[in-house]
Length: 320
Image 1 (cartoon, rainbow, N blue to C red):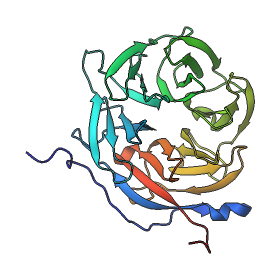
Image 2: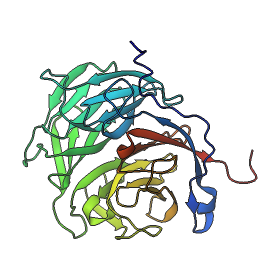
Image 3: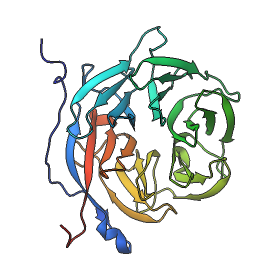
């Protein structure tokens, strides 16, 4: 048999593709270039059928959920090398149907939301099943179509596409509170796809069918919203994944526009890149995104192309 760590691991290094379009003042210094692709279509090690979202393990590995392969795969974040996987389809405590959202707490425990069953499964830092909480439903602490989530200040914030809200638990799985609910007015949502949190405790929610980003404080109080339907800079069309970098810049993937946009923490447009296609810097059916706060590298779930695309920031002109 072939070496399973190599099957489908389509890693292309060193592509010097400049991908950003930057306007609006100082944003011209924010540019990215393509580094590599991770993955190819399939069900083997290092392959994807529906890559969803990401987290970094306590020891710095890239964790990627695959809703169709029912697993979480582990990669070296620098080389893209496949390392291992866990979960997978089955009836055991450690198995999942459709893993989508994923987050890691400061102790290294991995929380994975199962879109189909409503379960949130917790694995330890060695990827061994530890516990399960929540369930499918509309009640407090239940969820429907659990999506992309984050950990902040001892709490897990999980976006729910089915209930149009964010559910908040402590790290032992105890329900604490929720916010949102279906609607178009400020603070309401129509398919909450991602909830990610910056260094100040602001919660950024991608309100997918309302074509906007909504911002709440850590207690769920509405702060502001930005974005309107469109394809211009700062406009949005089915925003999905959200990520925060070390400067609290907000990265948003758009399913409808096949691109990534970057905003400052207040929602001011900074830069964008991408278009529909299969080449480097081109996307299809974008989902999750994560930024390595140490390196600034950006990992994007290019779901239709069954791969992760990786980009790195380009130093401003005139610097070494």
